[in-house]
Image (cartoon, rainbow, N blue to C red; front, side, top):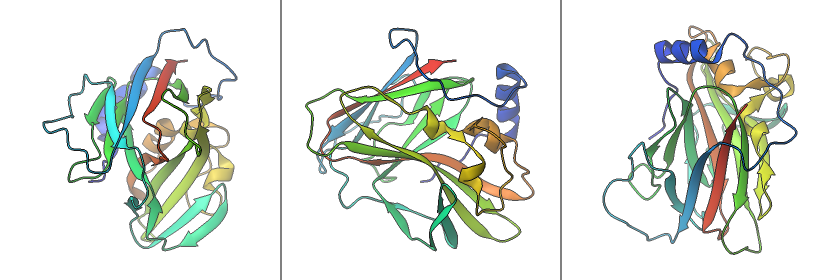
Length: 240
């Protein structure tokens, strides 16, 4: 089940909390020992079934496939898939891997903590503000690192066309990787679409909350995770 952005009223409240500025530069570095929110993506075998509910907002863990071979993220039709201004294709039916849908609200929360249920995806809510985001594999290394892409979904209501915009890709290794760019959108990444140009690197949730709701709908942001055997991926969110 695809998770949508929070209601306009909640977005307005968040915007008021974080201030008027909606632009942030991706940080060059951060104190990895500083205060942060930690999220663990735990890789399990394809037939794993832990039973019970994993949607407790106070959780810091999500259960994902250790191997996402055969997993697909279904895309709405008709669509145009763009990668930094280049057209990957029209009416692409799916992306390989697992979707982790993300929103931003009043606090950090795991809203859907397992991909091994009927939805076959996960859902995570960031707290208010802006963050430097770092990712690392903390389990035994595998031959092929996991890959994470940041994606935006937006429907042009006038043209009745879905856009999927790629905001970047990182390979998950034992070394901490700066994944903040996956949450930033710039003019190159909207090129080829009818979406307004941000002008400079802009925090993705600020950008989406500022779009005209009469022109664009079905707004969403998600991570595309392609896992190749990693049993633990750690994600850290440092307030900036």
